[in-house]
Length: 212
Image 1 (cartoon, rainbow, N blue to C red):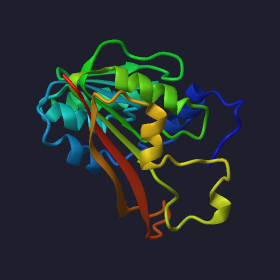
Image 2 (spheres, rainbow, N blue to C red):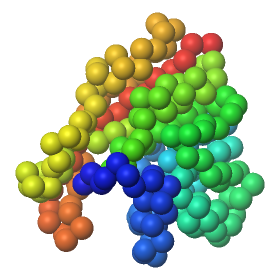
Image 3 (cartoon, one colour):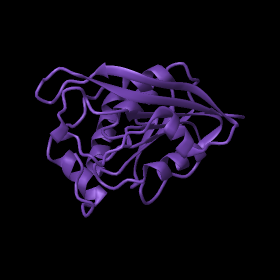
């Protein structure tokens, strides 16, 4: 659901994480696993890492990961989990409000998953910076919801929410022709409601390689 523009993103996300013990499942996104599983590990940047499941999965497969999020509570939970798994040396969790600042450096892999927010977020600007952060020969993986889950009703679907299309996002990013599109796909997956109502949801996946 959308929220008033007057709500500061940092406060919104911090409140969301603080009000419950854990927000996400702790399992890595299966689409990231599918797209990054055959890549040679190197340096990785994850944008909007939340409680760290994806960053920790990458670290467990040999990546040296920088993972950033707007919520200090989420980052603290992720760092604790990294210690529990013995991965503290492979992953660094950093606080960034991506609407204001962006991590420096270049990376062999940049992952941006579900940068779709009920509060203000310049998605296009962030994804363009993400592409710029990919080192030559590196990979950009983007995952976005393509629409509402099948169990949702019209009352739960704000009219001002726009979901990116596969070709539409490529057009918006306007990447130079030196980029190669490796994956451009819609993937339907199980997505039950929080009350246990069965349903599915389609996600869009982009995997792009920057020329050397």
